[in-house]
Length: 351
Picture 1 (tube, one colour):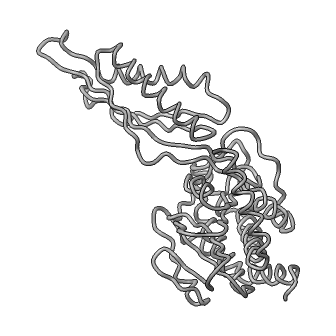
Picture 2 (cartoon, helix red, strand yellow):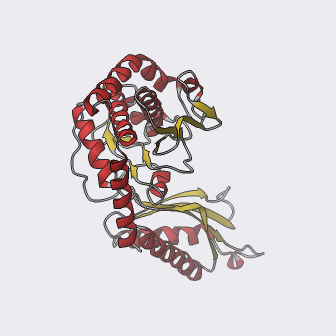
């Protein structure tokens, strides 16, 4: 059987061989366009829709890609690194399967990462959901018959500010007005806002949703309007770290030249689907720094940073670390069992 060191060396050499192709790929991915997996077919992957598979059976190691290539979120780097890691790991694979997809159905381990402003072995992604708050006013033949929907909505923002002042660490409320009227000559009958809620865990998020709903109803009562609060999309779970995987990946990332630090308290940027998946499978979701922490993920500056010299370093080092981790999981069933044992232990602790 090939030694771990030899497998890692082979994976590293494959990433070096693919370096220019992977770097070029980051610049062809953009916007909401789904990344193509066709380039994996030439390497023996069976490509079907949004999933590519190499090998068969267990263990099954999945490399999680985003469903788009948006550079302002670093998705172009994630796609390129995961494709490179899959190609490198496939070259050493003797048993089990490697899957690249944006929607895993079954896995023994899910591997991905998030470019950001810190290098951490596990990104503390909060539980999250979005609410749409709509305030309904009334209009009548005289000014006294009118109730101002926008005034009611502004009261909701005031209440959200009061809630924000006493949120626990790791929680957040962010809101934007999406509809506030069409003319200054008329009192708005409808006003609407979208609020993003973040919390350390699902129970905290549920409480925050209830508090925001109560705040909207109170604002409506105070202004003579009517409040309507609905969820936009699902409630996503917080990320559950698997220290077996994240510790293993962190050692490989260090060997590849990037040095993870202890995560700071509070929430971190990351893909919400990674939080959901971490409650179904052992998952590794590190953060890898592209910019100084004063910069914001999602900004124009961040999109530009994905084309920098630093981004190329992050791409190749992370691809190699992901490939090394994948090959270790495929070669050592005991490592997979350790990851699942920790997963089960955390699930018992939170049940």
